[in-house]
Amino acid sequence: MHGFSQPARAHADVAGTSADGEKIGDEDKNEPTATTSANLFGLYGALIDADDQADAQVLARLGWTLFTMASEAQQARYGVTHLLDEVLIAARAAAAGHGSPAALAILCQVLGRHGWLPPAKATPLQMLAAPAPHAHDRGYEAC
Image (cartoon, rainbow, N blue to C red):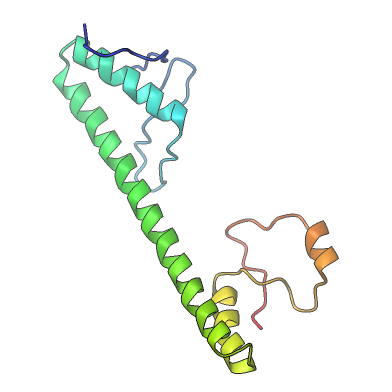
């Protein structure tokens, strides 16, 4: 037995799914794996079971799955940090330019490039009433 307490967990099978049938390690390399608490608890349970059974092959696969999840989370963090830095630099340039059209154009260009601007001539009420756009939709116009 292990020298630490185990939280309640769903037992995972060798195929990478929990007892409720939820994927805990996506083998498809074309789609990023969503890291959730349920995924991590399922992996934790599978690791404990594989360790108890001294199954090196399953331990190696689950270790690789954890490494992949951590790498994807690190890449997502890098991407978000890069986007926030880009917006911060543009916002600082707009503030330094005291809201001049040239200074605002930089911020407008950054926001437009990422689809973060409302459609031209949209009112705040229209924007609040509109359904949220999907991440892949770029139906916004630049300044």
